Length: 381
Ligand code: UT7
Image (cartoon, rainbow, N blue to C red):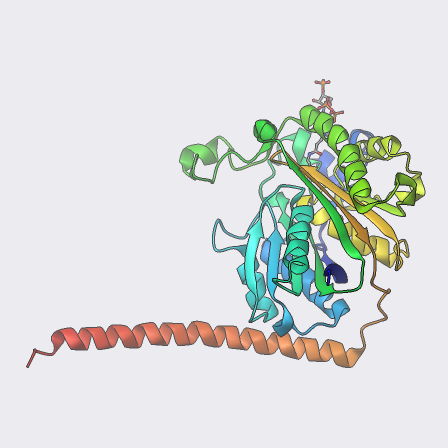
């Protein structure tokens, strides 16, 4: 029997601190008018020191789990798509798995730039359709503000922070993620990158002084690439799902630049009411942009059960990716207070257990060391 991967929960988190175009114009040589006209962005959310990629991912995932009404112990796998992980290692997904109390779950990060969430959704769908796993949490989370050069007006006006998450579950009912297209062209890698902090240029005084830990982008070339791949990847994925373009109910593109989105929508002959745009309030949140947009589209009543959705991303790599989804979840009601209280209790308990595990590991190590020392001191008989 064929298995299908359905999206049964969704959630988002954006930091409360907002940075407007006017705020930016006080620190770099730019204007609100230039940013709005060239990108469509008016403001972006910026994470505080305490709001890290993992913390935001946990907030978004907990909301998605709440909507899905799933016990974290049932989760088989946690995938975090991010270009701004908490650490080079361990994976951010492992920190999230622990905070969710997803005790049975495997966890890994996936890096495909702004296409990351589409890649992660495709990977999760593969695990479910092949029968390997049944319940998977997929998250896109980014703190791009930490890797932006705040003196480079060509990039600092574009990016924002936030996280979005889906819970996927397998079922024999047709629907959910029906088709995916993944693409990459590494010959364009240098067009959008953070050059240092990896094995080629490890962190050192030189790399810090020359700002090699910040985003470097050839905006014009990325723009040209994006307008080329957005429409073609969307067309291919619709075709692969067996849909004509006029059967698409809502197009949810990566939110990078409204001119790129308009050009893709024109090429696909989609009217404005079938195209979801929210970048004016968030800027480009990279791997988080599509799940955040989906949450807002649901909240504003633009997605209903049975709808044909096409989502498409592009970004560093260069990468691009699209998914065709037949939406199958009904709009959830308000989460009842008792259920919310149970969840709080559950997360509280799992964080106590996590602290317990860390403590017992330390005690274990200390006792083993003591035994070793005693053994070495005891003369052999
Ligand atoms: O998720 C993937 C991430 N990346 C992207 O999506 C980026 C794709 N590219 C773009 O969105 C656009 O190329 C940008 C928004 C980055 C730039 O827009 P553009 O229309 O391609 O502008 P441009 O780079 O051709 O620059 C035009 C002018 C330049 O001045 P000169 O050389 O003509 O005098 C820039 O120096 O605009 C200037 N400029 C600015 N002016 C005011 C660049 N940034 C700014 C700014 N404020 N923030």
